[in-house]
Length: 315
Image (tube, rainbow, N blue to C red; front, side, top):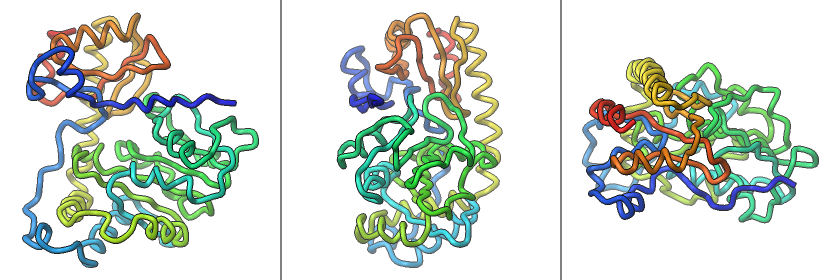
């Protein structure tokens, strides 16, 4: 039986870091997450976005934009929710509790969600459900269609927008497959709390009922629609992220780390002592991510433009 990580540790936690190492939150450089440091520029919002309940037109615009951006199969439906986490929590309700297989290491909210609904997390043998994170967090490994092997197949593509050619979205119309998308990472607007589920219409209808009316705010609908419609910004961002990821690798390797994986939004490194590396950088008010299951792995997100010199000096 596979043992799932129950600690539910995440990136972020900057307030906790500041309480230990000092300094105001504004003085810290947070590299513990995989969020694009150059966020999509905020569009001008309509008055209705703030003062009225979200209407059908605003939702329809976002759904149309999402279908085009992700090339959603015509026979699939799209559901927008207040963050991918809200959808992850609902995934175990799509089938009777049995055994779920979640290849490790990966994002630990999936195991926590299934366990909360009475699902044991075990090996692939005998599992009726399977979760893959594509690309994986934190290793950055990609999956293929051959990996879609369970009756209930959850494909978390929260970081897949860095390379749409490797998405498994074309398989979303397969019975039992649910593809999840996160808006906050690639567009750098995690505080907006926006996620998408893409699957067969009957599956999406079931999730929609569970979420209730108006799960997404009016401002979020308008901002996300504008961002998804802006294909030029997305392409330019992919190029910049690739360049910055290579730059980050060069810095860390020069400092003695070994590149071990990641995506253009975050990089994974092997070091002699991950806790010591995190502590050393934290004393310079730079926060990074380490993992309870490894003493040698450390993950860094990309610095903003004004953070590169500071990171280099701390290293």
